Length: 148
Image 1: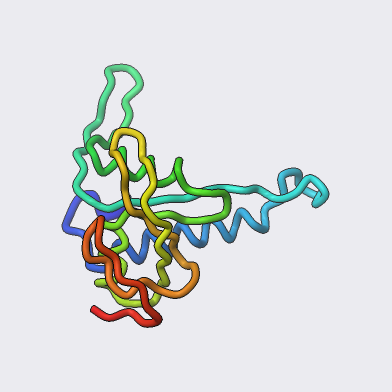
Image 2: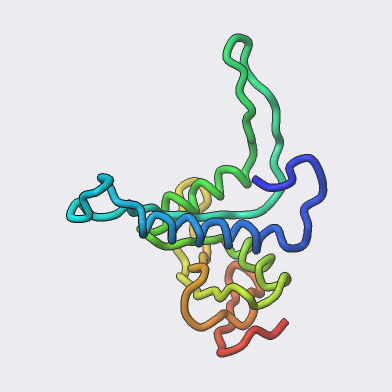
């Protein structure tokens, strides 16, 4: 979650993508057991979505800051339907990434079944040739360069 107390800067999707890619890269170099590389390295999956949320402090004895809303649920689904060592985002987040500029490539993953959401078009972040334009959740154009 970024800038929950004010308007989001135009580059918030880029910041989320950079963070997720950095987390995957850090996991790639983090051994499961310190000093024993034969155990392998940590494998994580990451995903994100962008949109409005409602935030509040809940509880009476053990206060917790919580976020609520469809955006939170969709972001959670982007993580849970991602694959190990990859970053997945929704078409809404992909559109925001493109508006910020072509610095982070996107590859169409395709339409996948997402619990509670139906079928959604999702994207791999930081991989392969970029998507030319994210028009809507059902219409995609693929190409070698980003055109806005």
